[in-house]
Length: 120
Image (cartoon, rainbow, N blue to C red; front, side):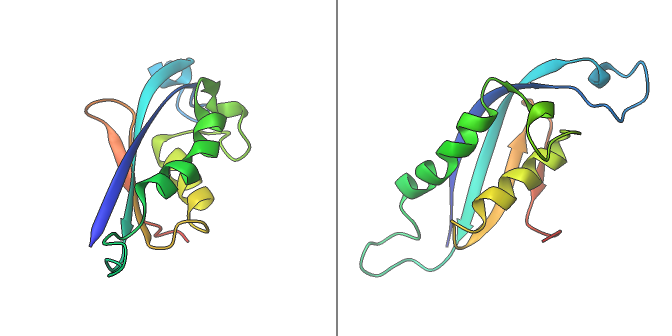
């Protein structure tokens, strides 16, 4: 079984490694939508894979660090592409969320990325 929980945060960033003149080289902001997926067996006692409240609690410190901040100033996010932010989130959640299998990060309604731990 796979479950998911969605989180939102607002943040600004700029991409220092894109060519001069690229619109993303200027500071701008996004209303990010992050969907955390967890895979595992349904516990016969509780009837769930994991408590959604546990996912909320695990994500809360990340949200405090990301929400209404400049991503470039956060350690490990000097080039905060969507891909880098998704990997950053994964690395901070993986130890505390057994069965973490996917991070979907949406920068806009039509653009985002999916990270499934392939670099770990």
